[in-house]
Image (tube, rainbow, N blue to C red; front, side, top):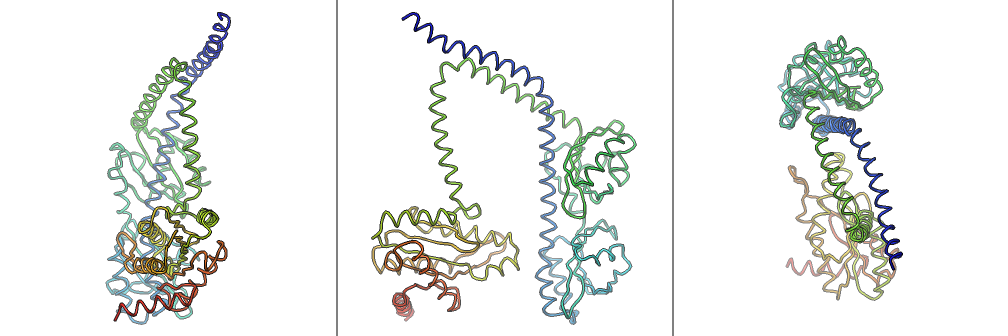
Length: 498
C-alpha cells in the first residue's frame, strides 16, 4: 500500500516539479523579452490605428465620389446643352457632400461651376492629370489644399469632366477625440514626402518644412532613407526619429491611391507610457501563472472537464458560423438546403411551404446608390424578415439577392394563403437605410411540399417557376407554382377589395 501511495505521489510530484522548473525558466525568459514584445505590441497598435484613420479618410473620399455618379449619369443621358440644368445638378452635389466647389468642363477645360460662373481650368496644375485614363483623385493647392475628385464623362455625344473640390481642411478634424496626446499628429504625404494635409498638433519639427522626409533627413538620414524605400515599395512600418528635443515614433501605411502615404506621429513619451502599460499587464500575467502552477494539483480535473465543455461549445460555435451568412445573419445556401432536406426526410408527409424571392432591380440599387447601400438593403431584409416567422422555420440567403423561406407544418389551404399574404404584406412596408430610406420590393415564388415536390430539387424548381411567373407579371408580387392556387389567391384579394 505504501509503495502504491509513493508511486501515486511520484506520478504527480515529478511531473509537477518538472513543470515548475520549465515554467520558471520560461518566466525568466519571458521577463527578459517582455520589454521588446511590449514595444512591438505598441507598434502594431499604432499601425492598426493608422490603417483605421486611412480607411476613414478613403471612405470620406468615396462618399463624396458616390454623389457624383448619379449626376454623371444624368449628364450622360441629358447632355450639357442647358447651362441652368447643369448648374442645378452641380449645386445639388455641393449641398449633398463636403466639397466647396463643383465644376463641369469639357475636354478643353472650359465649363461652369455650381454658381453658374464660367471657368477655365486649362492652365491649372492639375489639368494635365485629367488626361490620364484613370485619375480619380488629384491634389492641388490652387486656392487652398484640395483633393479634386474627378469623374470622366465619355459618351458619343458628351466628352468632359465632373470635378468635386474636397478641402483638406476636412482632414484636419480626423484626430479629434482620438485619445492620443497633444503633440501627436496625422499627415498625408505623397511618395516624395510632400505634406498634403495635417490633423492634430501643428508644432512638430517634422511638419515645419512642408516635406516630412526632407525635414527628418538631416538628423535621421538612415531612417529617412529606409522610409523612402518602404514608401516606394508600399510597405507598412514604424520608425523612430529624433529632431532636437522632440522624439517621435512614426507609423505609416499606404492609402492605396496615387502612392499617397498616411503617417501617424506620436511622441516617444506616449510610446513609453504604452510600453509600461503593457509591462504592467505582463506582471499580472506572471502572477496569475504562478498561482495557477501552485493550484495545479487541485484543479486539474476541473480544467479537464471545463476544457471538454469549452471544446463542445467551440465546435457548436464554429458549426453555427459555418452555417451563417455573414452579411444578413441568416442561414447560408448550404445550410439552408441541408436543413430543408433533413426536415423533408424526417417529415415526408408534413405539409410545408417554400418561398423563393428576389429583390426587384437589385443591380440598379447597387449601381445608383452604391454597393454599401445594397449590402444594407440585404442586411435589413435579413433582420426584418427573420422576425416575422417562427424560430423553427428555415430562412436563408441562397444567392446575391435571392432568399429562401421554408415554413414547416402548414395545416391547411387557409393557412397557406395566410402565410403568403404575410410575406406580401411584409414587402409593402419594408424599408432599408438609416439615413436614406429605400422601399425595396421583391418577386416571390411559392411551392407546397410534398404535393408540388417531394424532394428539395423538385420543390426548388417549382418555387422557381412561381418566381418566374411573378417576374413575368411585372415583379413586386407573389405567385404560386399551382395556377389553381394562384387563382384562389387572386379571387380572395378581389373579394376583400370589393
